[in-house]
Image (cartoon, rainbow, N blue to C red):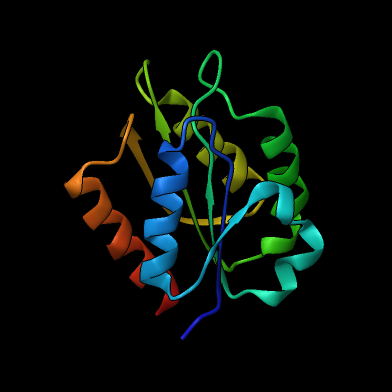
Length: 134
């Protein structure tokens, strides 16, 4: 079983709810981004990073800085990206994925939901958590 880091930032609690569901399925605890650093990446076999869409469909600047610091240390370890959004089309996730892959991150899956995760979203997150921990 892989040791999974589920790292998130949440403004309204929607991405936090997603992180907690995913982490539970992966057999771990969700970690707030302020409690995580790139130096910790060596301790994990797989990752899930979560951030909601902010402003003009972009990542929170502090979270983005953390993710960019981590990107070079993730290597080919399986990594998922997830988050929630209120408006727009989810373009921030596609941009995030493309940027991560350009840095060599092995993005195995992305997942977004509009506002609060519903039962279908929670089920999908449980599946993702199981996939990362396998």
